[in-house]
Image (cartoon, rainbow, N blue to C red; front, top):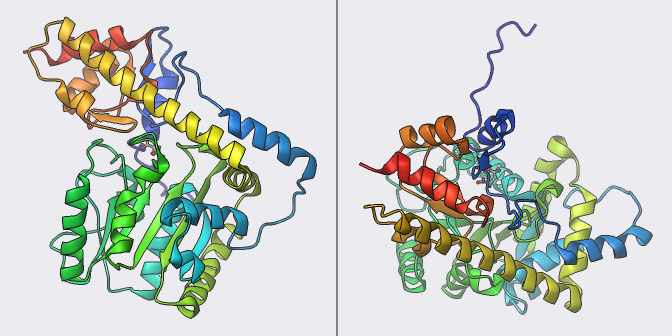
Length: 372
Ligand code: LMR
């Protein structure tokens, strides 16, 4: 039956983790996957998450969630993306379902688009997160009325976001061309340290009267990577349309995974609905974002100390968890082969994997492979 099945190509991001794990060197460094690490190099579980789990433990049962997921989690997610007092939420104009993190939200939207707007394509940034290519396979030169995906904040892989002024211009252009914008918001809070500020692009589009879609993920900003907690929302013309769209999203989800996982959703809704836990969360997001800002500075200073003739200004100019270094695939290969440092072949460094212990080693290796 399966003799014709060829091995799949390695995933450009998660394949890096596999290569890292297979390397026996004690010096090895993983700056591949965008997953936060503390300065001791270890994954972190936020205090607000631990406390939410403690509160949940006594009261939770293991029943199925509805097909569309936890209503509490969805409500809190919408407030986070669209604004605490959003009229769109009050008017019930948003069709939203809990999704399997950001990937699941994007994928569900792609399936919805394929089913109900089969003649449309979606235009994605170049470069973009590698998995966007897998989710939507696609082309160029957008005719009026096209779908676009843009990163709401902390662009992956470049760490370069449009300014507020530029978002306003983009919004204006989208109005003129009647485009639909789907926001992928995988890093809300990681760009500025403040989730509210990081939703600015979305708010600009809402103020300008666009209908939008949005994928939210709690992988990075709550550190809930393996919990697959996220939300897909689509702003509709009115409540009736939102009810119809939501029912179709649920129907798409049913044969794929039936209903989404419970535990992560409970953690999210417990944190976001409790003012005390939410304020701890906000401090912890800021703390993670600040560590990344600090370590960016340290990497740049180390490179300058080595008298690298290249400019490394972009390390500190870029924002979010990822740094688009400008290194070539050949230089990235040398880093892995000669220095046991693993990153994606586009030269993207996950700053989350850089620590005070390995920053000098990393800077030295980068200097070695980039010096003329
Ligand atoms: C990344 O870009 O490294 C993360 O979003 C993890 C992933 O799933 O690719």
